Length: 393
Image (tube, rainbow, N blue to C red):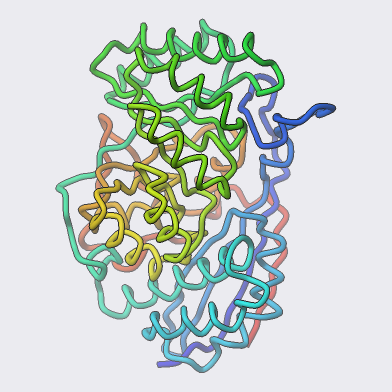
């Protein structure tokens, strides 16, 4: 069996977008003169990759990170490397792609491109062998997957409490909110961020885990003070307080607080996560399988994390991450973005793929009898997208 053709499809959303009360700190919100520090970190397109074999199997991969650039990398650089190769040789093909691009890759869009193809190759492997990907990666390590609710984008305290109360009633025992006030608002903004945590804790009680995300928006001094003042609220973790390259500052923060620190959404490959382990920088790794190097690298990182007592709770609750969570003892839970209107970009996955797992009472289940990743393409929302595709064969 050989790879016969590779198709890339860029889905560009042209439907309505909700932005009126969407708030979150970003790396740009640490700078002055920013009219909209969130705009570069919203994304309204998604890349789908299809790999077809000469025996008729079609595997699907995807990339949400800068999908237009990622598409170009696959079309111009990576697709030719895979043609006429056996799709079952996932380890070899990952190394071939990684080593061929190392001079201009190693992180970012190139790794997102490699990841999308790797996911599609594993999808084919599962289809050929008649097994879901998580079974090929080690099988079940849990009867079902606990998930935490991940939205709470509003600054409005009444709306924040209403949303948190609703999803507690839906059975979620964990939920994550975003820092609504940027570094540039100083102590006054910090007090407002703390107040957001306080009202959520007040409404959900002590039996629900609360997580707080800063999305790389703060510096060391601000983060250290914020963590000190957040300690009474018993956070499950504080997420991405600093830029991802500030490994040394993450390590200093970790020494200064009892609150677990998470990150790694913007880190890449086993090499990047090995550096984080050596620095003792994080308690929780949050890679995204469609960025970090696909299933091939995710397995290695999970093994490293398990050996060092670090949890793996991937970014995003999509199927490529759920197979990793199900198959690894390093991973106790998954993130969950429910299907809603398009707001930040993560929601787009629901409008493109059929087969995404739906939470019930705070848990997800994967089907033992559904081979591969378990996704196909939806047709219901095609009129809401412009689709740019290219076939390479």
